[in-house]
Amino acid sequence: MKGNLNKMKKKALNKLIKLLDLEALEENLYRGQSENIGGSRVFGGQVLGQALTAALRTVDKKRSAHSLHAYFLRPGDMGYPIIYDVERTRDGRSFTTRRVVAIQKGEPIFDMVVSFHKKEKGPSHQIDMEDIPGPEECVSELELKKQIAHKVPEKFRDFFTRERPIEIRNLPGEGMFEGPKKKPPYKHVWMRAVAKLPDDVIMHQAILAYASDMGLLSTSLNPHTLSFAKGNVQSASLDHAMWFHRPFRADEWMLYSTDSPSASNARGFNRGSVYTQKGVLVASAVQEGLMRVVKT
Image (cartoon, rainbow, N blue to C red; front, side):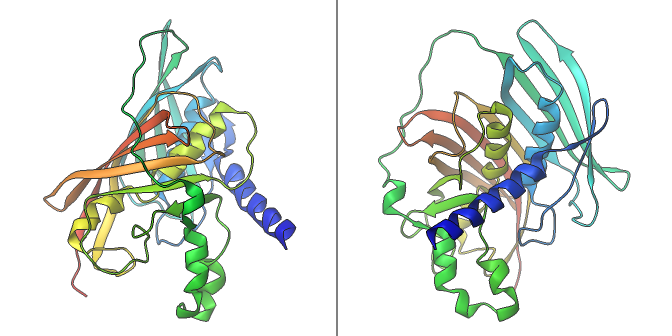
């Protein structure tokens, strides 16, 4: 039984790896496909991961991404491939800059600028990780889904409980299936790829970019008893930025600590810090998203 489960996990992760492995069409031009993860539009994290992969393909391997700034311009259509057009903006002595535009049906749906940096020595400090229960003390989101699968229409159960490439473990009281109560504008989740990944910096950065869009926007919903599951909010990612601070492995446990300092004018602002299990801060993310209240 355990062997079959491991095979299913590896299959789910290999599917994500294949999704991020773009087809080269021409120099600086790549094509990616999409996967339905339950929404009506292309998942924003998928576009982030694919765009970062496209940019990384045009950069010296001795340099890794240190920051990206992206805008989601139009909803992605899962029925069409996505074309990624990379502009080689600058190749400097220490830094490299790339611009990536994602295109569907002749229109840009996403625009991102990525900066790469060679390794350098310099001062180092970080804000310490909070004292949070470890992943072994938390229940996986998938296990929680399996416990309530009987409440889901039978035709959707297999999709609802399928293996995912990223394992998410919520702290008690912070899961997506908790009751409709007001909560503080912050949360913590443990996450990791479900199986071992190759020693490829490009892949680990692309997978973390993919995972960074999972649940970040929902942090700003906490104080308002709004949730995607209840259907009382219309939401969409508007922009997304990331900074990669230190080396990491996406197949090892990472704590994603998120908070929402502000929500106003139908927009929620969210921040995230990614730590290793040993408390090393490896990445940061920021996102603003649409959050329109829908009458149910």
